Each structure stands twice: as C-alpha cells, then as structure tokens.
Length: 609
Image 1 (cartoon, helix red, strand yellow):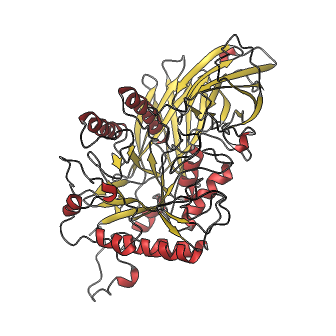
Image 2: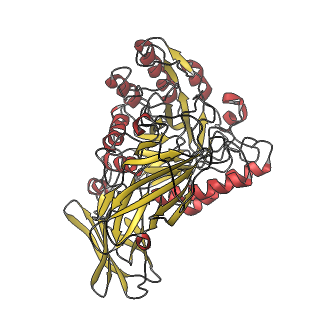
Image 3: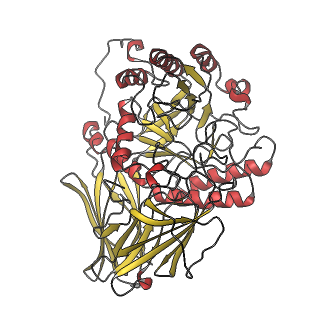
C-alpha cells in the first residue's frame, strides 16, 4: 500500500516495519497443501493487502475459491527485543507459520490478530512467513456483510473478499510491555478514564506513567502501580467553568479537539515500554426523543458509506483515500457516516477522530440463523468493540441491520433472543454509547429507533412522518417495506427516532457507469438528481419527530449507482449544491429563516448564579 501509515493509531510504537507489498500466492481449490510440509507451487504474485478478487492485487480473480496461501520473506528488525507479527484483517479463517513453525490462528474476517513470533525466528538472514486463508464463498452463516454469494454482484451485494485485506506489519517490543490501552471520556465530571494492561514475565513493581496534553499544554501527569498487570484510573481535567474555555477541550465535528497522550511502563525506574496515543473529552447520550452530543441536542446529518473502491474493493487504495473520504463527507454537509456492513480500517477512524466526523459502527451480517452463526457473530463483534472503543468518533453501535441473520423476528423467539442478547452484551461491553439493536424495522431492545424508508415521493415521505399526534401512533400504522417498526412487547418508549436509510436515487445519466445501474429511484439528469435530493432532504428535515437522518448513499458501489459521488469519488453535481441542500436539513430543529425573533427581555443570568 502506498503512502502507508502506522496501522494502529491509538497505540503507537517507534520500532515497526510494514510487510505490505509483493507476496507469493496460490489458490488451493483441491486442498493440495499443508504446513509445515509445504511444497507449494506458487502460481501468482499478489500485492498485499489487496484481496485476490481486486484488480489492485494483480490477480483480479472473482471466481469461487475457498482456500488460498500466501508467502514472503522478510528480515529481522534490528535489536534483541521480541517480535510481534500483526494482521489487520484476514477473511475468514487464518493460520500463520514463520520458518515452518505455527505461530497463530484466527477466525473472523473483520478484526485484527497478532502473534509473538520470537521463538520461531532464525538467528540471522531471511525469515519466511506463510499464511493459510479459508473463506467459504457459499457460507451464509458467518459475518460477511455485503459480500455476494452469487457468481456476479447483484442488487445490494458486491464482489467477495478472500484472505488478507488489511495491513500486515511487524513491531519490536519488550518481553514485559503494554498489551492494551482504553480511554473513556467522562463528560459530566470533566475526567478521562483509562485502563492499561501489561503482559510479560515481570509480576511486581510495575508502574505506568500517564501524560495528557492539549497542544503544548500539559493537562495531567501521574504514576500508578499496576496490580496483577492491570490499572484503571480517572484523570481529572481542570474545568475552566466558562463555556468558551470548556468548549475548547470538547470534541465535536465542528471542533475535533484531540488530547495527545504518552503512556510509559516502568520497572524500578527502567523504561520497559512507551507508546503514544490520543483521546478526547466528549459524551454521546440520548435524552427522551433527542440525541445529545456533549450534553446538547445535536441533529444528525449522516450519509450511508459502504467503504468500497472499484479497483481495491474493501481495502482503501492508500491512507490518503481514507482521509479524503472523511473530507468529502464533511464537504457535502454531513456531520456523520453510517459505516454500513463493514468494520472499517482503524486509519479511517483516525481521520474521523482528527477531522471531526461521527461514525455509526455496524456489524457485518450473516444471512442464516443458527447457534454457530450467533457464536461467530458474538466473538467477532466483541473484538470489534474492543478494537474501536477508544475512538471518539464512534458514537453508536449497531449489531443487526434489517433483521439480516434473524429473519423471523416476528415469529421465532430464538431470533428475538439473539437481538436482545446482542443489545445487552454491547451495552455491557460499552456502557458509554447508545446501541441500536436492529436497524431498519422490527425493533425490540434498542436505545434509538432506526427506520428505513425508500419512498421517493418527497410529499408522501413528509406526510408519512409529519406526526401531529402521539408519535406512538406512527409505530402502529406505518410499515415501510411492509415491515412493522417495533415488535410486540416493545412499544416506542420515547427513544430518538432516526431515518437511517432513505433516498437511494440512482442517476442513470452517469457517463462513468459502464454497467447497468440499480437504485430505489432514478433521475435522468444531474439537474433532476439534485432537485430530488433537495426535496427529499427538505421533507425529512421538516419532520420534527426525527433526531437525524442517514441518506443512501456516499458513493456509487458497483451496480448500486445511488451515490452522491461516483465510485471514483467525483461528485455527480457540484459539491457546493450538495452541501447547501444537506445543511438545511436539521431534523427536529427549525431552520434559521423559520425561527421567530425573540421577545425583548432582561439579560440572561450567568449559569453559575
């Protein structure tokens, strides 16, 4: 990957090496090979981390292949520390050998894993890493997101991703070192919570030093003793007490203030390990029917983002492409994205943290219900939450989408139990963020009600959600897509309501599209496209029952030509026109031209009186 950047942005060390680039590769449809016996005939070279289905890999084979193998040589990093081999993501099962010694295995196509390979290294010269990846293209009972099971992409499903699709890298570490780091902002008391765990052979006398800075200003510095290789504390940030000064330290899309952190592990004064990180002070909560950011009502203007590129599929072409996607979402007037059916690369979350963009994180779905399918989902979802817990941009967790993987929610108790269990598990693993149990319809346990409605008539859409009586009546009467909005026994309890999928307008006039296009509605010219976009957003923005919306979608994705941008990220209409239409649509908030002038009155008193 060109322009490669450190792949784990919230736990950074100096001594590391990227293993992306040219690897040996072969498909193994006949199951001919095993390790450590080896004897592979390498039929291809592949550019890692691009999947073999992608053009950028140098292979571009989109056929059915269940098993593939990778191999490359590498040299040791200088020094005598332990060497850790990291994989950002391998779809779906992986086993790894170094110099013929098995060093690790992992199941789950969207989450990272690593292995200490020190014991398998040769004293000098070249080292050889071999990777086995297994990904059954017909298995519908594993988390697979938008990966199609048919030979060619159809409807809203796209090319498959097999094997390595995120960065492979090495780092050198001490025998006793920092293993994990977690940040928890505590807005109400102006504190930053942190948890550190260490791993290694030193049992007693370990101390961790924490420094937190805002630019050049040192906000906190302290030392804490680890008990049983773990420590958890809260650091108080000085509260200036004045809104302007308070806001300087708060993170939001409008002012994405990050606090730099340095964490040092010591034993009897000796530095064993040092990492750099960052955190932020912000809160995301719901209060009655509104979403709150930092204690204030915050209308959500989001866009659905699939995270695919034409030549590289789920892998970004480079780090600049990830940054540019964040910038483009903001340039179009959105303050957030719903990352749809994908656990996105941590580098995307880094740029969302740094540039200021809210992210709804959604678990990729399976499409067949079984005990094994739920077990797989629980394991991978738990790993995803652990990986991304500390990113301030992540504001909502979404375990299920449109009842995928639990198709019989209205009639089968086990399917209902799965949604309720994943909701409560997610709230247990992270009590600081709202959880949307099943986005789209058939809601049960949830903090936010998400509705999917692709009605393309703005007047009908507005009439449908311009509720003048009790909001609960909507959930008894409206059935977009023929699906009930809430399950029996789970009436609307006043939670915020967000239109989390709507629009889906394909622009068939796009000269870049070389294949048949698909969409929920169609526009025949750029002028018709932007006019319909404006009217749809005005209709949704005028519905005061909504706390926000998520328009479908950010960019064209293969046959699904419903993007505001083409697949190459060029806008279909001038981006300024998209921006102006988007920022008008503040759900539940009157537009500036509609807000009456306030009556004259006395000057307001300060908050602290």
